Image (tube, rainbow, N blue to C red; front, side, top):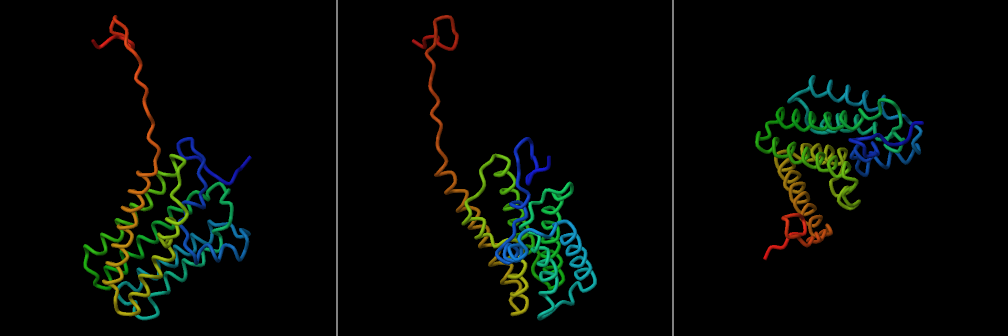
Length: 215
């Protein structure tokens, strides 16, 4: 029997959580109530985005900066699907790779300083890794933190908006700084709220076993 989750190292994982959809993607998914299978829309969107970026590297300006993000955004219609297909586990990696490609290609082609591009991609990747590790442990980040990350759609649209306004380097820097602060803050608060297990000390015996005397 197929369920709505897959297994990662023995722990059930809901693939929809790993998609990292933002407000726009989730909103589109609610419109069709999970009726659209996810794989085909995501594959089509990723292919079109890659084509647009390769064909127009360094030539996107103004409103055309929104084209790749808008095309991939259409894959959000499948965000409400149970993702219980045999190959639906591929959807999150495709979305991850397409977002990284968009940020790298747009930054490089538009002359954004390399360190800013690297910083943004790196902090987004760390957020993705954090979500995977937490899911493996069965402890997802709080819903407010997930929403605060903006989702792949929100991040791509924010960067595109910065390009339209002529503030692309500024947008990269602000988004990288915001996500870094969010990651540090969320990690810190998570440590503070994690219960500490008290380890009881067993008495030792005189033969040097676990209950041996220390005096």
